[in-house]
Length: 327
Image 1 (tube, helix red, strand yellow):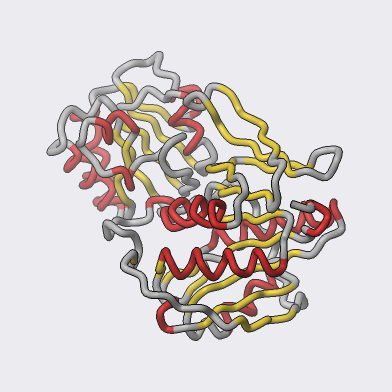
Image 2: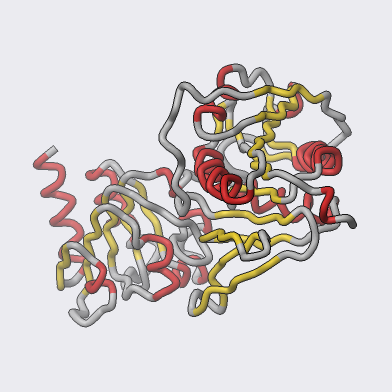
């Protein structure tokens, strides 16, 4: 491999139902910062059908060139065809860096692309830096979030998946323009397909403005009905910590934290959870944090904007009733 042949930074711009996923704009923001430091071009690749103005929107957030694969088969995520065509493009244009959002779709797609182009991959990055020699330093939590690993890839392209809502997108700028390059997709028969929001049909907790998250203090699956009642009253959704998922009380898609989703809601209600570093890593940037815990020494209170020391089985129904009265 001749590393000198690889130039530029490419972002996979994920789309759902014909709309670019917001993580793509965050990756373009970080990609632009890296590109300006190295003096390289920022490109994006989109696979879909009749994307229209969505392609042009990528220019307004930093893309200088957009590669478009347009075909009805690509309208929904098709793992085999997405991997095959993106790998073809990488081998053709040879970007030195490829960034993919660490969504459910991205986490499934990225390792397969990396294997296809014979390179390494750093998963679930929370920060990206440029080293002295121009190499990408990929930073991710390790050992359950107790340390941050700094990883440098010696092969090309350098590939990383980046968590949603950890990077900042650029302000939208209508004056930014670029070139759309239409590529002819190679469509191959595939039996692996994910249609819709997620393979499980679950809600996307990362998009929620209000999250009511339950921890070990919630004793059973049926007790999450109390949290759901509060979430309904506040116009939000219910989340949970890893132990709740491990015990089979809630699905993985609802997990917030190091090994779950990173969230930035306007209101985060932490119910019956202590506030482990692994959990705090996924929700510390919430606008307002309300903690409810019977233990006044629980670490979550150090991060919370507001705290209620009390039994969640008493506090949560009263909060739900108050929220309904005020709505």
